Image 1: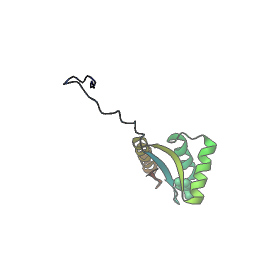
Image 2 (image 1 turned 45 degrees about the vertical axis):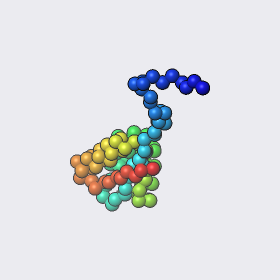
Image 3 (image 1 turned 90 degrees about the vertical axis):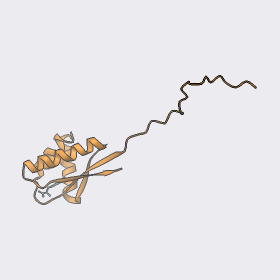
Image 4 (image 1 turned 60 degrees about the vertical axis):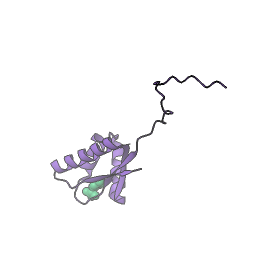
Length: 103
Ligand code: TYC
């Protein structure tokens, strides 16, 4: 039986790999006793692009429960958000912290 024509030197590619989805990371804001509520709302509006009412809701959730979700992002974006929060907090002398957690 005739074999399919496969000229020597032709490029025989592997079956195409499925496109992999990037890992996603939660960015979680932590409560503390010193950062003002207004500053946390400001952070949620400017860094996480939350509308005012949602920013207040998240801030109060963190205040009452110890932590709260700000958003879910790819690794580099999550790292950038965490750094922005820490830089803005430090500049304003607040101990506000946030962490990222792989989903
Ligand atoms: N617990 C702070 C206060 O009573 C307010 C606060 C809320 C601080 C959320 C941090 O992520 C935070 N002033």
